[in-house]
Each structure stands twice: as structure tokens, then as C-alpha cells.
Image (cartoon, rainbow, N blue to C red):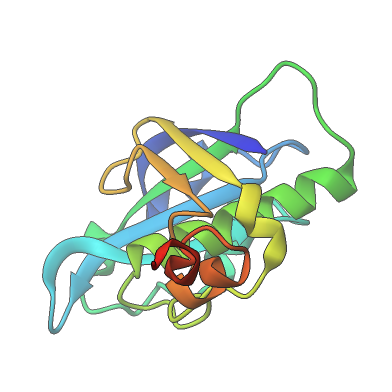
Length: 164
């Protein structure tokens, strides 16, 4: 399954009203700012706005009070396409895209989905990032980020069959 995300931004925390709060304003978002170890202007967090808009969800994250809150930048990724999928499918795809992007990029303030991917639905997911995707890779494949021992179970790298 290909998931195309069109990224827009940057938005400041004070400008989240620019993101909009329309009923279709859901997707994945990235937060950039200062981290005490990694420095300033780095990818801090990848999140999802699934059953609430970007404006509502990002405000809940508690970015106000961050040591450099006036310089926090937010990028929002909306699904590309002419036809809106069902809410259930939309929610599933947002969740899969978020999991894969977190695992592949390992943002400083995310802890979930970083160590390994255990969701078999991600095997066939391919996220393509368009426009202002900032520090994200342009393409991320679920198969590419699976642990090798899980790939072996499917026979892709089974070297035992090749030995003479």
C-alpha cells in the first residue's frame, strides 16, 4: 500500500490557527526545535492527528513551556488524493504512516515504535513524502525497516538453502 503525504509548513505554535481546523485536517505531523543533547532545530517528534484536527492535537502535546517554544516549527502531512477514504481506512493509514516514520527516523522525543516494528500490516506499506518534508527521507518502506530475523522467517534471506 502506497501512502502519499503532502507536507506543509513550517508553522509556529502561535500560528497553529493557520493549519486550519477543517474536518479533513488530519494526518501526520513533525515537530522541530531544541533538544539539550542534539542541539537546535532538530526533529523532536512525529505524531498523528487522527480523530481530531492538527490544531487541536498539537496543542495537547504540551509544547508550550519548551525551553525554545518561540522557535518550535511544525510541519503537517496530509494524505494526497482526490477522494477521501472512509474514516476507518483514513485512521488505519495515518497510524501505519506514523509508526513507520517514527521507526525509520527515530525522533528524539518519540519512544514508541523506535526499537522494532511488530505490526505485520507494515510489511507492504510504502510512505512517499512530498513537498516540505524537511528532514524525513523522501520514501520509507516497511519491508526495508523490518528486523532481519523477521525477514528470514519469510524466506527472503534464507542462506541455508544456498549452501552446498
